[in-house]
Length: 220
Image 1 (tube, rainbow, N blue to C red):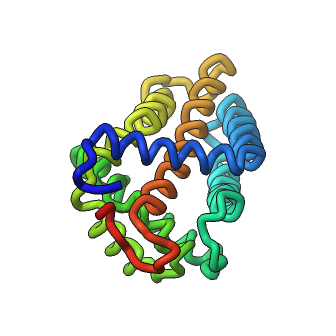
Image 2 (cartoon, rainbow, N blue to C red):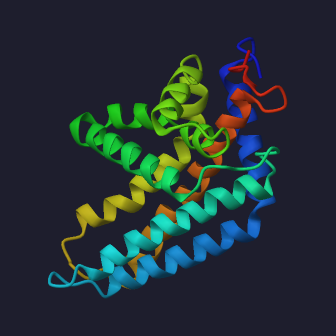
């Protein structure tokens, strides 16, 4: 992938690599999707104003299963030929930083949050595959994606829209307890989009980093 390639060509290459990653870890993807969709739906149809335990428990399970999803995709797609060294602590710290910063950006004007998610899309790869500290991973992702914002944005377009559509239900429905016919599609969109964006983030990293040489070629 080079800067001579068109935006469309670079987008296609990112999506092709994301597809390869998903196919390589298909059973993990399916297990994560079914488990989180089922749990999310169950919490939504049984929620109450007095009980926040369900949402907290879902968040905890989401973090743990999110970590298992990404490391299994890395292993099964053979993205770390020299082996992974970073663990859950690195993933958790990265999730906190990216999640809070992106949420703040979205709350401010929406677009800043989307822009941060694009520029930090390769950060998990730098952290979990290249074993970099959180600050280094974020910085390297920012630099590596500088000339490729549009290809990455287009690759992330459908997952972003899907996640937003699923999340919108919780802001438009005034009922504390969602009916199954609303909760299930919302969770399908949220967790399906999460799977897709995870694979795309790893794909962006693998398109940027020359793993065999051990150096960043940044699409050059």
